[in-house]
Length: 271
Image (cartoon, rainbow, N blue to C red; front, side, top):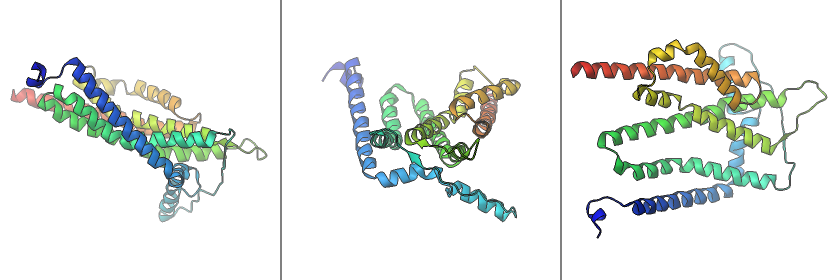
């Protein structure tokens, strides 16, 4: 047994070997999950294509809610078929969707593996905070995905797919366009939902505080609208839908910093 092993430390080559085995386990799990998802084609695409239907659960619940309030509201029915313009398009989209969903399902395991890899270099208090931060990051990411799936994407698709400049013109939407827009919007919403975590980290580093964020609220709103315009389809309706939750997260970030600052004041007074 080497001196490094006796002291409980790994050499640089040992760390690379641990990293290699970790990556092999992660890739093997993703491939296995992708194969399983690939076999459940009907269930997978039923879930993926559900937001394009006029009877999607979001629209149904909205109608029921408004009717319960005495508002005779109906979303109306529509049918927007998807087309495939290339020979291999459907098969390649099937593979792509299987891999993306496999990566999403494997993400908790990936986080655990990454934490196991870096945990020996952390102190006990850092490990505790790492667990909390990882849980919050993953929860916010899932909330972003769910918001995109149930609210942003179906409403955006309904508006853009049924919009006509003239009744004689019909939209022909390709499967590639549907999948790419769905994946991009959903992933980006998962990312932008990390705003409170980013604000917390910047606050910990002393770069920003709640007073600074309050002072620059108007500028932040403009930046948020620019970001929303970049990650959303080119229509004003979706832009507003995305801007509202992101700005809400900005306000959550202010509350997080205020709580953080109060804790620092309490700890300083006790010290």
